[in-house]
Length: 340
Image (cartoon, rainbow, N blue to C red; front, side, top):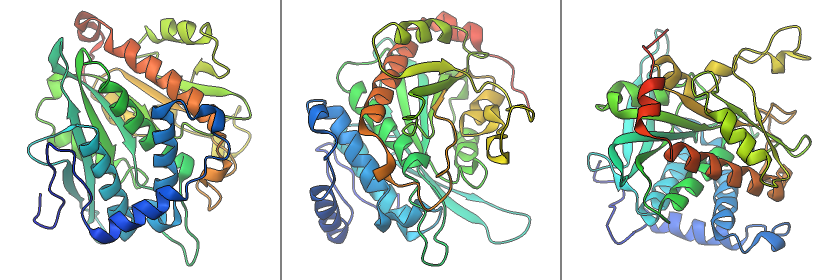
């Protein structure tokens, strides 16, 4: 960690610059809770709703990798890591990487990594990922990426907060990745540098988890690598949630079923879970379907229905608890040989 980076203390402190601190105070004071009056008793959700709005603010400039907005987003996320009591890895939350292209300038990014130690199988790790990068400014147009993927990062921080309530069985590694939009570069860099690959038992990836209000569906991919997810879906869908958990997105959308090119998605390789899947690690990929605002300037937090987002987070927390409750022998049996 460079001298210009924030100093992280065990006393849960704080933000890198006074200017950033003033902006955060002003931003959080003006956040909209107009639609969350009935939800305000859920402290973890209110924090997640705030996180989503801050990360999708115009001041973040779309959080494109290497941008000033990206640095601002990093500072916000890392301050949250410290406040939530996550442990830095090797002395720092920030893990920088450089991706060299065959043509063009190298890409410099930063993954943000924090650990919560487990109490039953502390040497074995569940890796929770969500990419915080989005798209660069185009002229005067800002791509705020509220659903893609401020929502996923808010979900990651939500699980980090939940993990502080009771010591989890497995160690939890929270990884906010950079460079996903450019080609999963952050996840690739994380995995290539992680020294304990043999101890990773599961990946939980959160990418676009807030815009399922029309269908009231949250999708979960990974059943082919983790068959026990069928049991989880049954548990969730009989628990009285208004949002249905649908096991799907385990294969490329067939061309004949895709109504538009936007829907022709290679789901197993669509986000950071692909890196873990190729390494033979079971995964859970939570997300919604594509929508008209995907990768447009209209992907703003004001389009998100808070009630759906709250239900989605509650379901994801249930899934996280389900995954953390699985015996180590289950994960050891599910582990496969790496594939291309």
